[in-house]
Length: 271
Image (cartoon, rainbow, N blue to C red; front, side):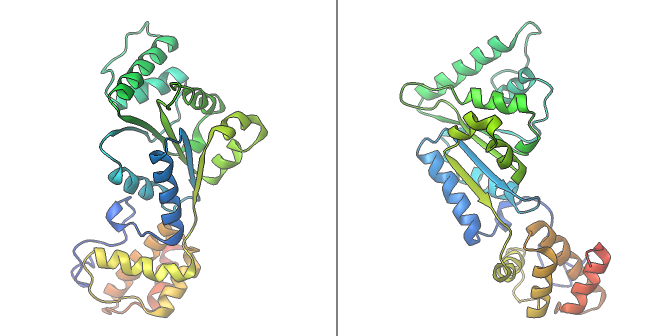
């Protein structure tokens, strides 16, 4: 609705994990570099945690874009499986190992199939990465299953690299006494924090520039108000900023001020 009014190629604040809009803030760069280091150095187990809406999935998509083509990856987006057998099947299907599974194939058969796949890729000189998003929803039994999968290794190399991505409660669970064996295996623990007040302005400018905007649409007072209301959480920044542009369109103004931010907050019930 407002893209033509603001001379934009596309809406800049959509709630989509599009890597081209990802801003490498200082904290995001730190988390990203930790994960790249872990993969490059053969760390078998890694974890990325952060609050809801902080940009974990977008960082993950950005990471996947930059991975070497020699790394085969499977991404589990919804790990709420009823059994370890269903969990392992989902992983195998993502790697294209099987199109269907015989009804008589039990867990031992599935693990054997997985191990043969991993060994074949290792002999080809390829790394294999398993990414589990929303990992805080894993049951205790499946979280333990993930630990056991990390045992798949040769004398000198990990056959399977695992990256758990989830909310802060995932880290709390992993670091509890119950999961001390799992905790000891995680070599890389990266975290993604909300943007600082100073970074919010850069975030807005970056997304506007990617969308084709050639001018600064948000006044300093508007940026400050958005930073305060959003607490630096990118998802909330996007929601507020999108409504701000709509308010600017309604008010026929190309300069977003505190008035438009107040209208956006009222509309979103974030006052």
